[in-house]
Length: 553
Image (cartoon, rainbow, N blue to C red; front, side):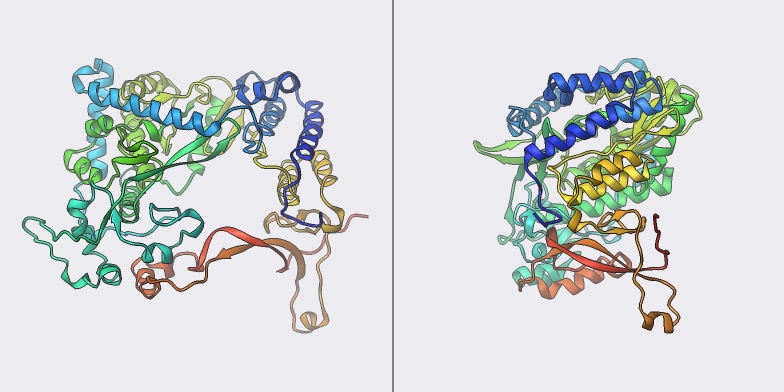
């Protein structure tokens, strides 16, 4: 094969997974052996199973049981005899029907007294966090990394989006001129009319431009795990650009007003660890969270002016094979402020529950990952259910020694996060799995994984420099010139994916420098403006390090 990134066959991948399964089954306890037995009966049964890891004998049993399930549960290539996209599409429209029912029935009068008190308190908290609707000049608009209705994912970067025809949803159209007044050079590049945008400060009346296209959202699906796909509504380019600015604003307000940091998952992770030790915190997960943020729940919880402001940035219809269909959710995955909005909603409800019960403990959220005092778990689940959300009881933990949140799994304070095998194996994935096993202290497992790599391609190097090489015994390369010049380190080799670049002239290229200044790109990590998603192969590169070589005799 002699290739570091090429995936091997499904048959070879299954043989590898079987060998790993056999190894870890012998090291785990009763729960590990039980899951292994399920796999031997039926791969599908294991993938569909939702084990209760609180029933593990100890942390080692929980760790290896998690690993058994993680070998197969997210395998995107595995054929389970199910049309996963059809299943995902049906679930998406089922959630739409659910949102429609919530929109018709959710009122303050429909809530029981306990939930009503939670909602009223949550509304006050949201108003305190958001404040007044900000002036557009105070928002930091920018592009996200994904596709738009006029730019495909494989070509999506800022230059491509600046070159695409200006398009927005029907909801944004009445105020699009007001928003476009913030970026006149971009408008000029598209139409030559950038200096003719007219906005009345008294009435906010704007000139309507016939060259702005009206686009509905595009419903797409991306792989999630072996059983299903995740729905995403691709937004028009203008909606996505302005939504991201609003999302950033909500993110800043959450941090400055109540200390919720949506750039830091370690807060949730640490609280989950404490919950696994003392039982003091529950970890709450929601099913289809973004697809159940209904118009009704946002109208109920947000100040009216904010509801109208955000609604004007949404995309309320999606194109389907049978024509455009209206959405009953407020915003979807793909909308630039959905993550921040749902974080705000869930925080406000959770915080209201804690305060109404007279509990002074912390509340933390990251999207739909919620951490709350265990004593408030019942009221929180009751309140969320009344507001149209589905608490995932199989992934929510309020009792026992197991907790999981934001990619951290704990059993009595011990880290038990497994390695998820999501694709057919390649040397690239084997290197990552091998290094994870070493860092987890599983040296025998690392040795097994190493035996499946191609000997002629093996590169070894120090930890802390990524997974383009195998962490293990290595020797740095030095030369006399480095030594004479006083350099104390040396070089080792590693593999690295080559970024994929689309280096072509585009109509919006000349606008990109001003876009970079507008978004203050110089204050962020450097990024080649021609890079798009994907890679163009890989290369062996040399890295300089001061870490001494390690030798095994």
